[in-house]
Image (cartoon, rainbow, N blue to C red; front, side, top):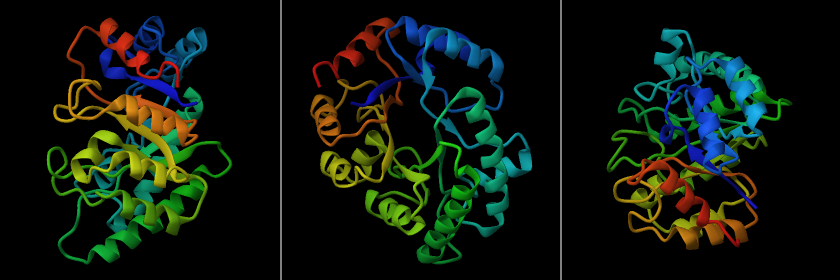
Length: 264
């Protein structure tokens, strides 16, 4: 059975306070993607105290030049970003170890106009192979995220589940999986349940949010009870993360979201 993870943005305060608030609202996990300015030791202590986990963090670097190279305005579709990617992944891995996090989220960067998509695809594969070497043996996985370009991320390179799966298969390393964001993929291509089930062996992390609006499930068009049933039936045992806003007070939203997985 999968584990539900709350959105860190639903709670007030610094990371340790968010951890305690998530636990108080019934969650055993939450997601706080940005770690650069986090007090890692205090957050780790709060996680131990509450018995909770942080489900994933985002690849980042404290070096501004390296961070600029791996940002979506540039990214791993460029060969000159690959060393920065490796270095940033090393930094992020150390943070992951300090927090006992097992997933690092990575993105590709925006599509280039000066070279073919095939070349950019190959650059992403090459970078992820380098990344797999960085995390090998650590128990930490890299999860690659396709994003929608119609509403939120105009110009981004990686959009479809099919191409993401192709990249993961070409990388062919157990340390690299798909981050399947239901909100993004509903906008980009629909067919959400079939895409999840057909690629479940490649999926290492799942984000959820309703469409339109990117708020909590139940506020849009996606039947999330059916989505959760399909994820459970497919045998997925990772995190399902509420990567979205909320339209009601946090305690009410938390109660409703936890109820979505009851009885599965």
